[in-house]
Image (cartoon, rainbow, N blue to C red; front, top):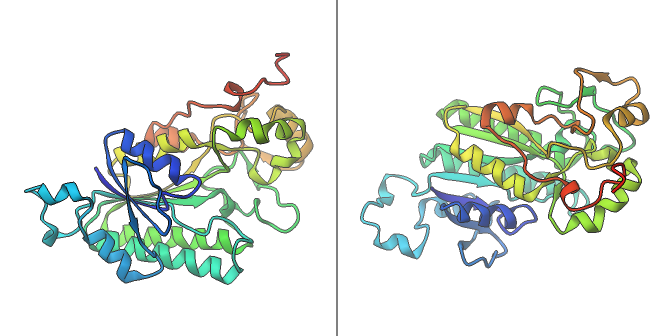
Length: 305
């Protein structure tokens, strides 16, 4: 596929965009900051400018495409898919109004341009924060565990509000056009080097992971998830939780429930180390199966290792 990847220079994107290229796809990184990866084409685009977004999607993807006799840009976009990861990635990085306005304007422009130019597959980054736990002032508990995609999204912060608004925009464009638009409620993104840097503290004190519903997503498994979305057609509009299969703490599920989720409904029996951030839907509809765990990088203090 020819893929326009927005935000390929960000924390998640700078892993996922090259991964897609390594799988044989042609990837153009639409970002204000170049990625500088030899297998990814950089294109400077301000996504809050609708004209720039349209022009980027309607333009020539790479120099090599100049010699493609079958490429006819008068018939719409050359791109087969858009992966939209670009955003102000959290609260407190910009004023709240700026965070919301930047994220939702960029999101709208990407979805409008993609669908009007005939692109039939859009994969976009939403967030774990939509469930209202991560960036809440004070403690918020899920209504039930494991948290699945049917759990209400009730955010109180500008970042998560922008992500919920983006989901609504995406559903609307999918309904209007019939395109496949898949949203990823991505949990806390962890790069491989961060296991040694961050996880010893998480294993010592599981309370540090309360706001992330004790979950995480390895960038390598996030790449797999995006690839599975690109390879799976015909679902229309869908939202998917994205996490690894286990928790980011050494405590067992029963210990976490006893300490942190008193009074919270437990909807089904859970495995000893199973994530509270359900990935059952992604497994069922996409064939997603995480391959990585902090246990591959560090000794599990409960194992006696």
